[in-house]
Image 1 (cartoon, rainbow, N blue to C red):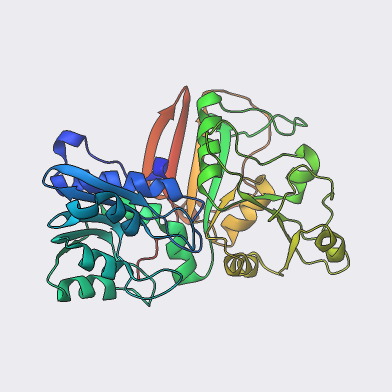
Image 2: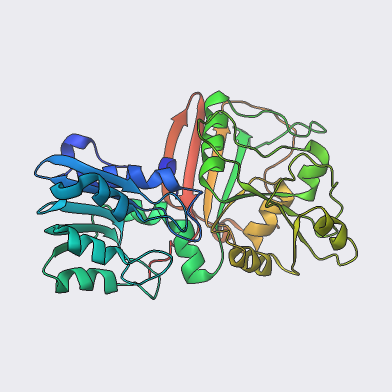
Amino acid sequence: MYTGNAPPIRAEAALSDDERWMTLALAQAANGLGRTTPNPPVGCVIVQGNEVVGLGFHPRAGEPHAEVFALRGAGPHSRGAAAYVTLEPCNHHGRTPPCTEALIASGVRRVVVAALDPNPRVAGCGVQALRNSGIDVTVGVMEAQALRQQAGFRSLIVRGRPWVVAKYAMTLDGKVAAPGEGNGEVSGVATRAQAMIWRNELDAIAVGSGTLLSDDPALTTRGISGGRDPRVVVFDRRARSSLQARAWRPGSMLVTTSDAKAAAFKAVGITVVQAETTASALTQLGSLGISSLLLEGGPTLLSAFLDAGLVDEVNVFIAPKLLGRGLSPLALPARRMHEAQALRDVTVKTLGTDVLVTGLLSDIPRL
């Protein structure tokens, strides 16, 4: 769902004009990742002839949508122009007026849409309103890339829970740490930089109580200009986490089954989610406005999510190291090979000396 994990885009020379301008719109939309929930990240480009006259993206809920910013930039140059939008323009009144009305009033002659909106209040109505006004509308340009970028929003709208992204680093022989070492640095500088990009782009980051107690991680975003820290979610069935842990900050959440200790966490401003199952916890996180969750916990938490079928996307960094004895990244029950969970839409790329393997375990919701 992030800029780094979208399906590969062909070399610019091989792109059609529509694909070229939509690629720019997707780049605009990426500026809003991690900041727009419960709204989607959306980008818009206004093109007059072969020249960009307006650019815009949706910065956060309650502010104007991407189309409005792009049309403001274009001004009178929008008349007769083409608008490229990564998501179907809205056709209803919410916190802001309908974007279809703004596009129609601007005098654009054509609107190119990457993907239809899964929100039942939109879902094709925006496209139909534009066509009814005489505007030429094309749908589906760079759709795969747009769906990946909008996965969190789509998951929240269609499934009522966040899109869950599992991330871990391991050695070439499948180890995440040496015996008794705790949180050792498996991967290189480029890999850690990519992890910071994901923290900046996703709504929340999740760890288990074991990670919090043993490593006391800050779980912040570092090294990114204009970056923001994701909300922290700690899965702690017995509520044994320390109230002085470095990770706690405004917006943090504790997922627990414990009634007795919940009050102490609430007293210091931590939101307590009481849930008996992981699936129930995810639904409650969705109701609290979490559309995307970066799973950075250890083997216990990661395995619990995988065993429950609740991981949607997997990102594994493989470092060119051989460790031998050590901690494995998963603690799943033994399975036959034919029972293994197979990734789809797999991409492989190098980051420094490390290799990043990315793939999906779930389909991205469409409508």
